[in-house]
Length: 260
Ligand SMILES: Nc1ncnc2c1ncn2[C@@H]1O[C@H](COP(=O)(O)OP(=O)(O)OP(=O)(O)O)[C@@H](O)[C@H]1O
Ligand SMILES: [Mg+2]
Image 1 (tube, rainbow, N blue to C red):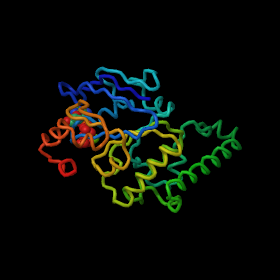
Image 2: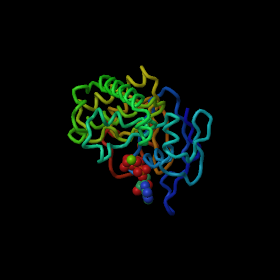
Image 3: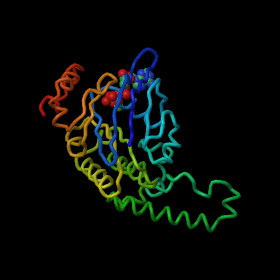
Image 4: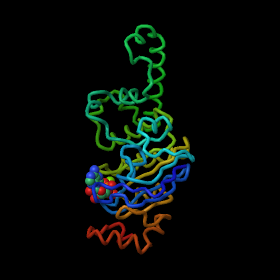
């Protein structure tokens, strides 16, 4: 579905991504792991159009999408989640979801006056869709809560919910589990699995929590120093010499890697 071909992203003389190549299979939940500073987020930003690569190519379904801006990728169904922006904190959870689809009629005043009925219908449809999303994520009870009052994990669920308001094909999640309590983390994992199985979403997941990766991801791709080191099941990755070395080499002896 997505082919990343020899991507480089240099910041000055520093090679944050240094010739990374990988393939993301349609229908997979692909895990992207690697020690801090490996270049995972930078690679995500290149794929999702937030950074232009120094060189290399990204294709989606055979089409060259290298360097396309995020809104064009969004229309192709490629999304990367972001934390809920500050300006949305004072809006309710339902309103946050209703904000997402970009092409609403009510954006100009003339339209607003001429097309009041159409707008009312669109809003009604959006509201129904938002409520459906909340139900899918098992957070209907939070519909009228201000987004700013949600816990970290609930905000992550809301971010995931926002991808469901447009018909996403492939979603990139960067450390969706960071700072989230165990129970909510499993709710998020379940939502990802169900979106994958029931709605055909493809996911690429960056995560340091190996339980989370193990529960969701196949294959798992490990990066270090801007390069792809290995790809396989989590067990294969954990047994890979180069991977073990990369984790130990950072000095931050990764507990899960060492124990697992
Ligand atoms: N805009 C930038 N300018 C300069 N250096 C950058 C920039 N963005 C990232 N880097 C550097 O590139 C390297 C890769 O960073 P990146 O954030 O992609 O790593 P990561 O694998 O996501 O790490 P982590 O697991 O800690 O999130 C790091 O050394 C980082 O300091
Ligand atoms: Mg990162």
